[in-house]
Image 1 (tube, helix red, strand yellow):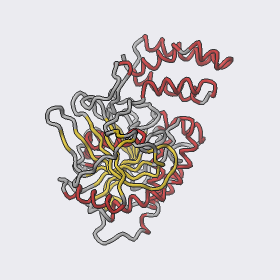
Image 2 (cartoon, one colour; image 1 turned 60 degrees about the vertical axis):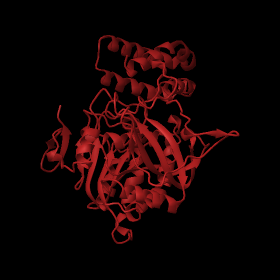
Image 3 (cartoon, rainbow, N blue to C red; image 1 turned 90 degrees about the vertical axis):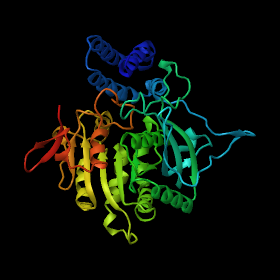
Length: 439
């Protein structure tokens, strides 16, 4: 049974309780759920079914009487079981030890790859367990390295596997699930030294920075960064910038405020990656709301005074950016030419963007269709036929449709222009040229 059908069944089972909570509002929701059930029974495409179901969930989450109940259902279905791989003594958890040279390792027997993720974050500290090492509250900029294990057998490209109650998986299994194993904080000098030595030992001396979107914990951001490194076959070193998302569906506006507050911290982290670790090129993948920190930082990139021999910006990828389209166009003109290539993936099916447009009343830069953003100096790709979700409102279609990760591999690793990438075809006209996926 697909995740879509499981969620639909869970909501149908909650019908009587939702009816009591929503009162006069329930009939409309009840009719929609019955219609979805009928469509599912007729064998409708799960991707189309999921898009409608996700929009219904977004609306239910905006109904205070039902919000907590629906959130519990979503959390039960999506939340990974926390792993504990550190040693407890006298009620405390001992900090993990960072090896002299941190590098990826592969277990040849199981195919499990362990990736070091060098992180910067402005989250407040939590407890000493990997899953809760950082909270959703604001803190100060801190640096460190996390270890993420990623299975390479029996996992679909882009899939962020976690234990699932419906599979009777009560604990994380490294051979099946992407796991945040350890988190270690480092002082600035130790961080730079560790990353520099690790990068020097790599077969490629580039770094990849991942910046997550709205409603994401540090744990899931680190897991996604490790999974991206493995699926992209990235031979350099992987970095994560994890801003202090509240990781709460009810706190969209809180996250909006925080991502603006976080810009100076991200700028400092990017400057460190460019100027101090010995990288050749720095690539950036930003998703959803995380694009705001990136694009607002790039606005000032031409004024930076970087040391001689500093790295260059390579591929900058805006994946389904949740930012005002007109604001994106204004800023794009200011950082034109700052990187080897800038790519925008847009989608007309991304639920997070549809919800954001509803909140703001203006198109988002990540939308496709009539609102598609085409800007000089940026390769715009209409990715509506594939998955752009990465991390967000648990609205992923991974495993059901192709992922933009295939194209990102050709972009970052193969360094191919859009007209050299098989999955893409030219669209639009001479004045408004963009790219779209072949059906």
